[in-house]
Length: 164
Ligand SMILES: [Fe+2]
Image (cartoon, rainbow, N blue to C red; front, side):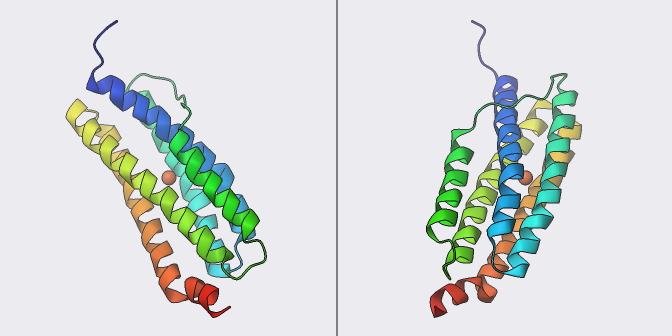
């Protein structure tokens, strides 16, 4: 068996985040539907549209590598999304529901930020120059989403959970 190199690691990790983004795309509408706060719902809906773009960008990265886009089961994102689904079930109709949804969404964003940060660094090392720009554009959107969620957490969603 050939020695595993950085390009293979990059490709495997690309498949991991491609799988994750597709899962996130199916989870976001459910989270938006469950959200009680209009602002939180709007944030989820906005990120759903961005996630479609993230998937399209990943497909361009696969193309730059001359690979066809393929996902690989990512247990980490399945776990994080599963926790979010538990919160939706356990806190349905409860005041803390939005705080729980927000926490789940931030866990998703932090996972993505970790992955995109790594992929961007590796793309630069491997000389996939178009990929660096694409991965960076997504990384910046994930960071912005995380900031929006933090702002929402500080500006009311969690206070509502406390007040009840
Ligand atoms: Fe994303």
